[in-house]
Length: 474
Image (cartoon, rainbow, N blue to C red; front, side, top):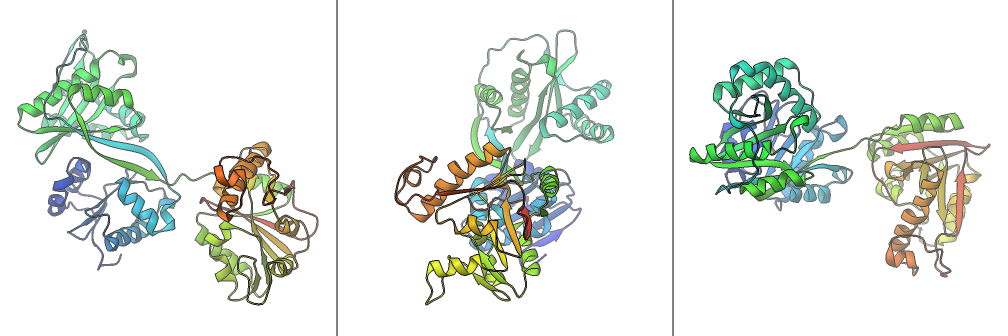
């Protein structure tokens, strides 16, 4: 890693940087806790940026003091790509504003999904609640260890999707028992109905792992347990804080009734990798050659190697523009593309040359998992050229172009891709103005004039479908 950007620690704690989080201790209280224990990897400049990975499969935490500091954002972007690449399965816990800056800085971060919204709360004054239920709250006991470990295991699996070993659960539970930081609600017969834990972070104490057994839910146990633990924290002279999942409004409403108020928000992001296995097999069974790539950059590198000293034609395409494929291939090929018209030539002349090239490269408007490949054109040079006349045709497909079946792919081509293209080109059509669907208009500037469907590769020439795990084009 570039030493001038970050200092790198492995399997160490980083209590020195704990103070950097003082102003944002509540939303980043988990990161603050993590820094006090040995972590798999920590990258820090000790001033304004921290990247921390506690251990797999947990998310990588990212903190940036000033998201408007372009130098820090650029350094974070480079570090994450090199040390914690999304395509390797890493996820990030990150502020929304920093996420926006990363996406503005680098296209690599545009094809990621917010999988969870994280809301942070603090409580200054506890409110009286009216949710009577049987039993009572108290500290967990050593003789309950086996039951507690089982509940801990089940709660982690249900809330995070992580299945820990029994030994791991026992280690965590024992630590809480020793520190008197694990609490339970026992029902009328003394059985554990709900659990939660607390942990000090500076002047705060974080309530975490609130979990009610499935058959004990909607009985008021959790809200009463959290209220009890919050009171013990206030009695210690500390401020109760907690994280919640933004997708659980019922739980969040309960915390607000206790007196918690929202003071911040983060998100967990990851790259959702579409499984191309079935689609690849289907296309190959129809006679296509199929190659798959994690990124557009990898696909562009592959095409740059495959296409050499050839005449090459391009169809009109935002995807090819995003891949910067013209710039790469034109260094060692003769490339004709009406989006790059040479001086002294007309658009029609460039399109005709492209139609007669040895190699033709085009994106698609829709690809069905059942194998149909759909394109819609205005001038129809692209759909005509795909069908016939070349040694080889490459069809480039971002995962956003893939639909379940023929009808869905056709709908996508007409009502998603075509309106967006019309809006991009500034034509005067209803779909360009509203951007929502095809109106089957009679406008002189209508772009959707020709529809092509490939049920399989034509009988002459070779056809290769290039599938990419990124959202590309329209």
